[in-house]
Length: 421
Image 1 (spheres, rainbow, N blue to C red):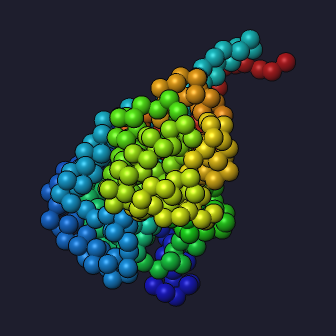
Image 2: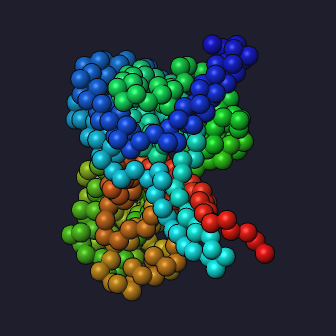
């Protein structure tokens, strides 16, 4: 499938079938969509051995490719993670169907009755790298919101994604829904990505999930609208009024639970008044947990740190590394985040309500947190069942993108022989 003309034809065929499936899904019943997702969850459980065998092949490919331990963790599937995928499919199935929901309605003096009603976007293209669970999450959320989806998984997760996609297709078949509603691009050829980015006739929006290289490429070259975040440069500011016990627990979780996800903390900002006490304790705890701390001059007195350079501010490590610096006050922390952040997720540790209010008011990240681990920056944790991604733009969708965020709306206008004077 390396011949460009052949690949273009294959992608056009996928697009045309997705567009036809989207037309049917737009009026599919909530019961049918729920049944499809529940059947898909059952298929994931029934095929555990097959999926894990496929994942083992992907893990071997990833190791040969030299993926970091954090990236291999993103790629790995286990029985527990497969159960979480199945549970997520069931959680999305159980949610209220957003399609057809009346967002607002009103009457006009002219006699018109107007309703604003939720409607699917149409066809969604999802381009992602090493996390095979995105196959299930994206497929399920698109189906729930009445959208067809074209999935282009990364070369590392090719076998795992193929096995999970088969479970979704089983669900569609069992519920009598068009199997073309969820399609997986059947090639590792990176040219397929370029094809998707220009399929304006077939794709209504692109959602990239991956590293800076992939997302930057999509944002630069896409002719189709994009929901995306470029990087998850996540900050935690430790305020002078931070609770020591909470802070130690939250910072360690935010960095070390899964360092390869976009909600992992990447930079620690410490108020000067607590730098020598609580700040030192936190850094020592991170180092003891195996984290490399890139410290500014004021924090290099802590044994085991390495000197930070300018390149460490605004860096997404996605690994057991973090940058740390002392700031004079909350306004200096806010200024640092404005300069180096990516408007993804930022957190404050404080018991001072006024400080928290100032932090929330003066920063415009998609997600702002207080006294909570940034690893909660996830659609599943927000009650959405799962997410198709985190959007940091300001148009249409922002923050975790769940089923509701994958809809637009239309106006239904009713009269009774009403004419305009």
